Image (tube, rainbow, N blue to C red; front, top):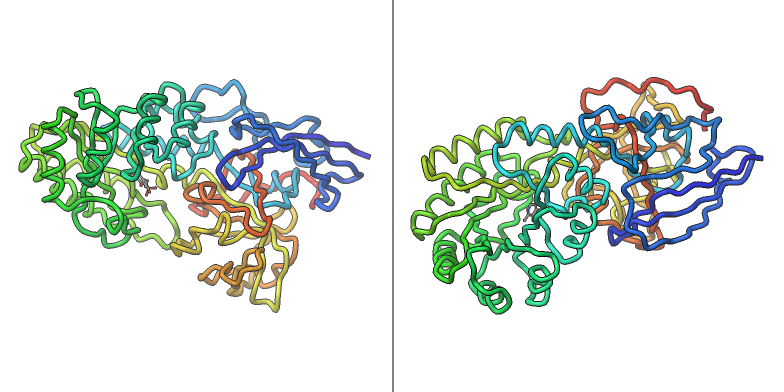
Length: 471
Ligand SMILES: Cc1ncc(COP(=O)(O)O)c(C=O)c1O
């Protein structure tokens, strides 16, 4: 009889992460059916790390917690599994599970640090998990784009001292007041003249307060279109920016070309528009915020490599602003965090060799796969080994809820004999997944572990087989 007791991380639909204590009792801790979950909720802000006490010795045990990347070792270092196979051997996760790699996040932050010369910030909405916020601060980020008072609390708690840019144009006076008084926010984005009145009613004009006017300059060829909800047209931006300066605030400009923007020239067009707005309004433009939108490398993406984006931005700024360049900011979400996290789901039911029903779906971690048709890379595990048959068939993927909406629009090529209790791992799942979980139908539990090497589907060697019992 082996008794294993440990704390794991549980992500609530609100993004709140709780420690959950599980007790295992039985001869084989890898058997999911033996698991006895006993949730002792704690209101501690957490989720940054996964802790294990009395880890089962005879199953695939985690590697040592020494990260191999270039950052100071966090004091509260998590335990790290080598890869997905080791995690399955050790945990046999029966609930939807996110696998996070600090090393991979560090790599993608490095791409931006190397390629972009201005201020790199992070759009918290994309993945508000505390372990991500904390690591980004350790990687040197000094500011975060926040959309709500709750995101401000997150930054205050997990990246203390960082600046916050309140870049959601939609906010009421109470939220503005809290941002200013309680969280020390001094940078606000607006896209309508009435929002200037709203702001001025709460925050007195001062050069210490930056007011950024969000404008739009046409739709990007391939991306989410944010322009239907946000951004004022060029002529309106000239008017608002002039008022911002005349009232005594510090004026800046920003745009967002839309998420997963595969049209690199959309940035060029918006930078040219920003220069025209600055000239026509005669403002002393403090900063130009180039927003987010930088693409993730989904297999279906037609985006050019990231260096095209950096080069296009640099030459557009040079060409349009010449010697009077404003300070530059970017606030990526997706391109920073997508590859850091994969998602391991389990097959609950297979039907007719054409459909699989998983333990999460459109009401949870696959919401964006459903909405936006981004198709992540997938692979299948049978026990701790990757199950790669010669013959693949097209399958429709359903989620676990009682709603017929809970089905993905894509056909996924999976091993023909995929069956109940196999796992499907989706790569590139760090963006807009943990941010938008729901508890619909009682499917409210998601777990999270750290891995050294995370599955991305991109030029990766197959996992080395780890010595462990098959589960
Ligand atoms: C104001 C703002 N900035 C940045 C982002 C991040 O965009 P992405 O994840 O596409 O980089 C968003 C996303 O909605 C946003 O609304």
